Amino acid sequence: MYTSENLDQRVLFFMQILMLSSSRVNNCDYLQDAKPSIIAHLGAISSAVFVPYAGISVSYDDYTQQVQDALPELAITGLHTCADPIKAILEAPAILVGGGNTFHLLHQLQQLKLIDAVRQAVIKYNAPYIGWSAGSNICGATIRTTNDMPIIEPASFDALNFVPCQLNPHYTDEHPAGFHGETRDQRLTEFVTLNQSTPVIGIREGSALLLKQTDTSASLSLVPGPDGILYTYQAGKTIIPAGTDLSYLLA
Image (cartoon, rainbow, N blue to C red; front, side):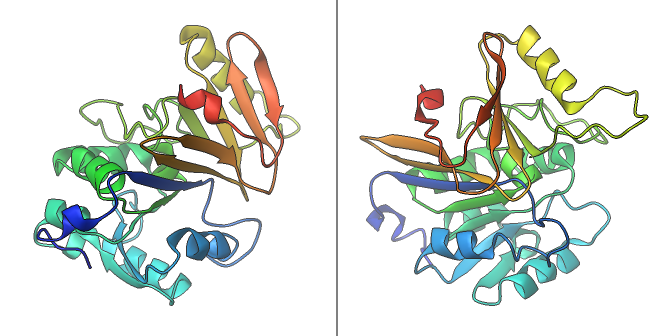
């Protein structure tokens, strides 16, 4: 594990972020569909700090154990067990952030003053970041396109801003027969209508966004899998085929 004494020995700038839509696809076991992508993303790294703060109906201990059971190749440390969470994040070989309630996740990160620490660990100290569901949602500019209810009020909606657009994990355009409430498409259309310069990427379950950035180049792409959706005020809803290069959205 990196320590405060050798943090500066890492590469000057190399950011790598995997934003998974969900922890499950259809009826697969927890994280099993995503596991090959997670292991490949981490490469030779064999341990990680897990951020469990999106969990509400499960204890942080149980949530961390669930991730450990799903990823036995890794040594997982729950951030809630660390006496100094900021130091633990800055020294983390890799950071995993699980799903649950996005508002509670962001609230806890803000309360513990971890937003800047996570950004520094990922951007300056090159710790790979992997999030799913809420853990992916906070990678966008704000959490204003989360699917979750605001069960707690964070200090602001501003998130990690690894990508300067909005994300919508668990995206679906299914419309059950007899359902008369607003659809996801309607809600995201409302967002771009009021925020005309900010695109929204809908990530279907079974898919993910991959961000890689150095001090000289940056790439954002939709990994192989289901198609994604892009919402803009100018073009409305458009399909993003798997493998699409979305790097232009980083500008």
